[in-house]
Image 1 (cartoon, one colour):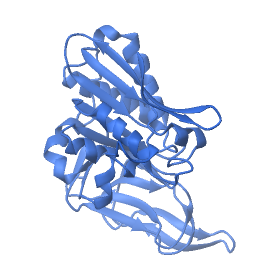
Image 2 (image 1 turned 60 degrees about the vertical axis):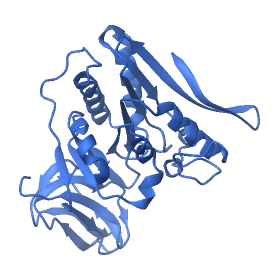
Image 3 (image 1 turned 45 degrees about the horizontal axis):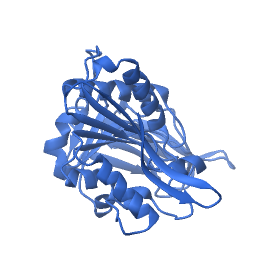
Image 4 (image 1 turned 90 degrees about the vertical axis):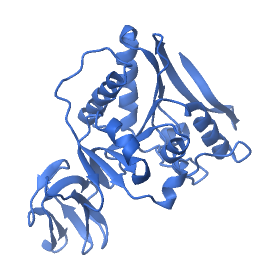
Length: 310
């Protein structure tokens, strides 16, 4: 059943609408929400929503509870391939929990929070930007780690990053929901403006696995669901460019690297010279790699999780 949670008239006979697909079966009161499309240039969640709706709608008898799918929290951004809300120059994931008496964007954020609040689990799906490629991962604020990490371990992602609190995160959807005692896991994967089918299918399987663990899904699941690396504390090394140029690499994210291993090189295409060799300073797990090759001094090129266990 399709429900509209926000509807606003716009100029030239247009309408701003945010809708959700509600799939319900069984007597259990558990409610599971999947949200995405907060940033219009992050598209991995579109395929995840499609696959979830297709699978669960095709086998409603396997569902015990309510699955709510929100594919586009920022529909104008998706329509115009913009990260934020067009014409407002506004990142939607920086205005939660919103304000019922505020601007249109603030009223929309408030309506979204009120509609989702009280769910037993929320998965907030994001892609990376155009510049970085991320292995499938869950990011959790350290304040909520004890509560949320056990859920994240059933999602089948490669990596769970428990990070320190930052002021800007207080205005995100996930922070607002977690502060309202509604558990929300933030998933990051892939690269901006693209859809990685393999990553999306993995996350769909992980979501169904988590629903299974919560007693909401009766379908058969892959018994070999991977167990993620859980990164807590200061165990992430950031590799930043030492010079400007074109970054060339043969590596993909999601691999182990060794100390001194070549990650890539920054080159000068005009003179045919290597300006800088990029090497790993640690043994670890490469979970972020530069996707957009043009770099400037200080540009982020990679993130590596390092621990004696890797």
